Image (cartoon, rainbow, N blue to C red):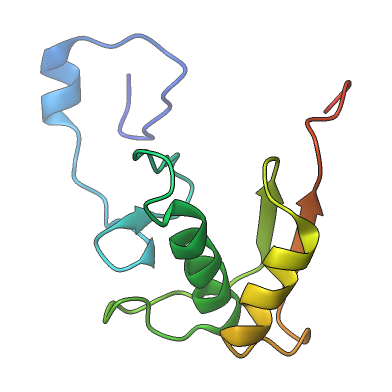
Length: 114
């Protein structure tokens, strides 16, 4: 396997260790990589949704998130358990104007999501 970092092929540990380290592009500096998969897990009612909305707004505006630099980009915000009015109110209280590049799906899980 070559250094093209094609993750769909098997490789030996030796090949993996011989690959060159490529720079990582970050959405949130040293926390959330571009093209990666991340998940936020915690007990109920500790602020996960609030944190996710603030992260979404920070990415959409390019403003720092908890003191970390952010790469501005489009956001798809999916909420399967919250009430639309609460989400709307929270975004408003955070200063959202509606001009931010955030698309939302708020509702129950679609029967055929794809």
